[in-house]
Picture 1 (spheres, rainbow, N blue to C red):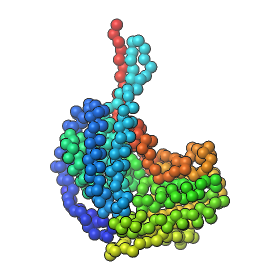
Picture 2: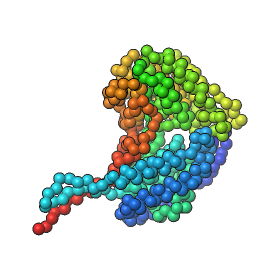
Picture 3: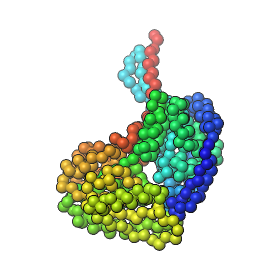
Picture 4: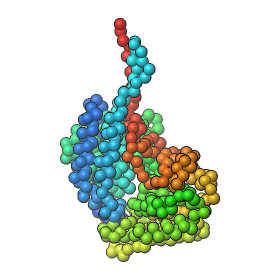
Length: 460
């Protein structure tokens, strides 16, 4: 057990303190989860759906409390901090996917019937990120529970308060003991749980380094590991694109949540024939993104999560400018806080090249980087020249060409005339260092369930 103190990026002031679980509490939680699994694995689809809907409805009732926690924890503007409706919508979509998950029939005859039925795997350890601390939870708790598993949730330290609210919400709906537990854990405790092999599944959303640590801890355990990691997501704006539409959505993809999204747009490739029009339009669009205190109703962008993150982002900008890039910043509102170290103005960098760190390493901040390309082939080559492969977007009025390009791009999700969008129904996950496994939809459910083959011979 260790103590913690959490600082808000809004003003650099501590707002939450407490202690992590002790080792006895961790052991008790594992025992409870394992015991609950013995009955929960045979629960009906209706029982599972009723439980997660009840949880979603309880979180909706606590929307104001959750939104305040998101605002103070990560600095998102208060008017954008309510993620509870997203939790409910994803939950309902996952229930739809579960209802469609029937026994899979295989070639049979009069003597032998063959089919596959799916069952839960056991206890799942789910590790939540801070950047969308409510909206991403369905993939971490709802999907495993619908699959017949029990879940121990560890929330990111920065958003511990959100985890506490989820724990209180589950208690309020009288959820069955051991099916969902929320613990505040040290890294060593997470490592110990995984290495023990008692968690039959580990679901992690976060950084590449964190994901690799999880993967290493699971070595030799045969634990199912699902990792949704970083991104350096590209977008390509062809010469036939609708520039105004592309700019509006790409700016949002770069600056919403202060650029702190796994699928934020971090690389923009623009055809040389439209570069001037695109950049002028983008600069005008940036005027809508005003950074300020998240409690100021005029602010559309808040600080990044920590002062150290802000320093990293500013250094990327500085290095790019030193190497020849041009920088343009959006306006900042008057700040009424003494510590402004976590605030980074939304920035447009033009004249960037693929050799700059800002085009190679994940930024996780409000920066739009524009590189000019000559044609589709160059755009495809540059989009694929990355250690990441989460999402990619192509902007064009020619859908056939858009699909042709998308087919050649290395990414778990490809968009045509869209970006920075987590679809309610499609599987979600990445290639390369962006992770392994898929969340959401039918594929997400299949990933948290084991297949059992049935061979039934009729006796005459």
